[in-house]
Length: 260
Image (cartoon, rainbow, N blue to C red; front, side, top):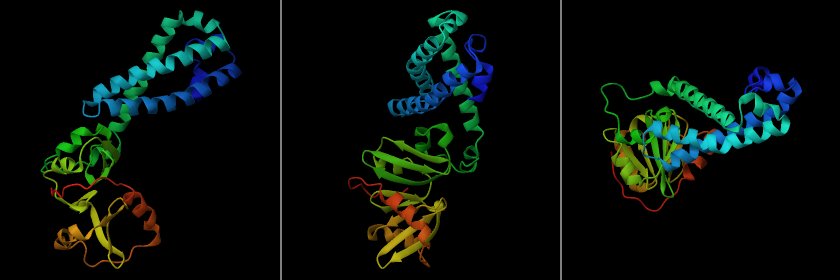
């Protein structure tokens, strides 16, 4: 916001005073953040299984179409000379497109440099096919999968993503990563588990490296007992309650019980 006010893009530096630029750019940039997030979300939902570059291209297109009219209308209302300084409406829309593309490129570069990029399995471990469905910024080691309605919540070391897939199919695409079903709605990677915990008689949970607590139903308890991760089972602290509630909210219709 400060940069826009001081730099005065689209000819606003020469046609507007500082106060006018503040009134113009502060709301517009705040609006661009919201619209940018919505545009990316729409693109990911529509092109969920497509290449990341196509998702980015669609997000840029949506953002330009939706955001440019706000820029044109706001600048023309604040000071009609802005349109003359930029060469007209078409030219101003083109400038907005260039800025949106630039922001998308910068965001892509920043995400590529984030720590999550270094959280992939080692070179000797094959990458599970499921990662190809995720945005590049989230392609890190998978901790758990949870069914949520007709979607699967994929929790990686880099963040959380939603994919339109059945849980059993998502588990199949986790090969060759070792993991087990913990509940009809939850699959957990073995390497993601810190310990097993008992909250009360009959209530058993797996505590993951990110702090999540995943419930373990009686049906799948023997698998985890065989790994030794449920013994000994200590009592969790009160601070884990929020994690339990978060994971338990993921509900779905009964799923098959695949094992990866």
